[in-house]
Image (tube, rainbow, N blue to C red; front, top):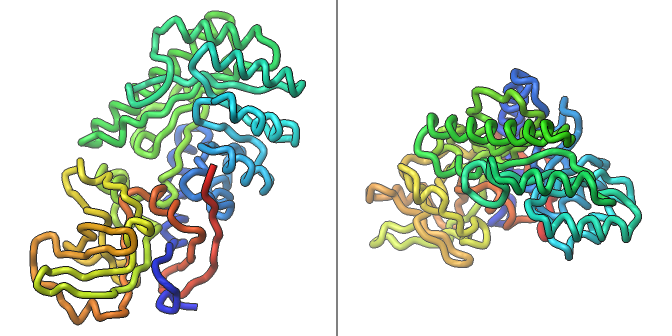
Length: 377
């Protein structure tokens, strides 16, 4: 089957770009001698994750328990659930552990230690824990030097049913950087926070075998990973326009796109109307704060080659509007009614989440495989 035979909108995955992106990060982690723990939230698909795990020890990161259950059902046992734990989720965590999964949770409060310990004792099992650290003020976690780190560590080391496995941080602030030097500085702060926190725990007589950091930008630009045992990253498999805007990748490295059909023209306004609205592209506007605002996505021909200065400027639920960002007259013959174009996403995780499968291509418009994905929690 060819892309032009598909009903639109749908999600296209370029296998060659996917392989290149994964290989690039594998080589960086090999250079540093650090384990890559790929994040399953971006692809939500076992085929992609198996590629990302090739040559790695085998552990993955997830952001939902549905991801944990799905990947475990496909034979992956070593799983870090990298969202602060809530009591209502612990029964599912316990059931996964009962079935043989090695699920590690994260937390940053005394209260979470209490209810994790109670639930583990209820099920007569042990729940391993990483203490979440805040390295850049982006989100959750214990800050460097806060006495809470040692308080949580001691409690995890003494309470029944829980085990201190180490520390974890996420340099989410890297997504707001304005330069590569800025990303490198965030990467060093991430490393420094994690390594120093781990050393504080060890000096206090507490175990800290895992020192986990990660974001795609810092994974790509980190210059020093001493003291770190693993790096987590997810977006790197596909990349997106936000990553391109940060200098993490080139637009030509973006592996996913949305195939859409031209369904109308508004020539007096300079609009081409397509059948890919926000339900196909998402409402993510991650490039709006970058030097180049890519609207809701960059327009490509059906082969996935970007068309100069053409972006999706606005979206409704099932409609997208393509314009020339410079206001130039469009080549209307290139956008005949019923013709197809592809849209590169601002945020690959958000766009992929709008679809239930990838139509996999290689260097042409021929579909070589269909890989199913899942959504939900």
